[in-house]
Image 1: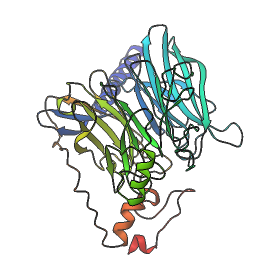
Image 2: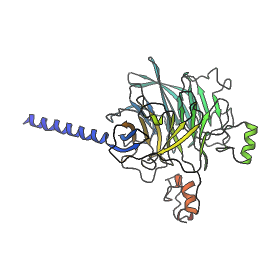
Image 3: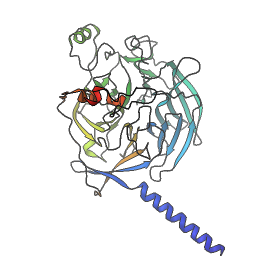
Length: 436
């Protein structure tokens, strides 16, 4: 009798495991490129606002949650393990555990760098902290830098260059005076040594500041040529992609996007500001960004992969040969999986994307298993009707009535139905902007 019970129990475990594996590897969508077929699968779900993805030293995908948790994830099985819960993370609106980057160049010095907001007293701060990875644990936290923070506009992506320098993208913390003041560390690209000191070859002596004039950087990516690109939220217009160079001023808050207004042109001449390599109006809310240069998906080689929140899409931005300009743009997954927060490329050339449908400004209709991490990989054949990339529109915007105007400029905060966001943006139901 006891043997029979164990037999049926083992059968149940095997069947359950197989069923879970089938669900985990289920193809949700196929994508047809010129000659490559891609499959999209869900590798993890029911996550609490995954903000950043990075590839760990254990050949697993690492992700964080905005509430302060950091996990490792085995994409093949969906098994995840909590690595760390940071106790002093302060989460509100866009504040919380944000950027993350791993450096595994030295066997005895495996570092994870994280950026997050805290509130030790009345004032909010943004912290840059280094953890050491030892015995499969994150230990020995070292505070590298602390700057003023805010309820929003904290940035705050991290990237590591080949010369072992740390780039930290900071937002203006909702203070317009910060971005143009080179003595302040908000609204900047900062460059640091791994121990938190100022590199001797920084463009401003005894300063962390590498470049300035930014509103709220949401994506950061280094190309093989060493060029640093950022994605940045505009205000009501002009979301941007900028190619960042030392000592350059990118104009905010005086200039948004291209230098195409009389006062912007005048300011640019006297302050030597730099135009973005790409801008979008209406805005798309660009977020996390990664450089793709793997022959696994040849059509995407030498491209920036850009996750978008408001536009709810993945954009592939093809670069020219010297990585200085964008030559083509293709849009994928538009309005298929909701708001997309970050993107990461594995050493094998697979692409991982995190959704952000349950954050402070939730999408109207999040799925029951949001938030999710999606995987895009090359396959031999499609099992679903393949979708294709679409080219962006001509850029012209039709605003024939209040409803069109509302969708373009208001819906991303106040929601498509005018319902607003709890305790943040008031409901506009009944307004002529929504119903007119």
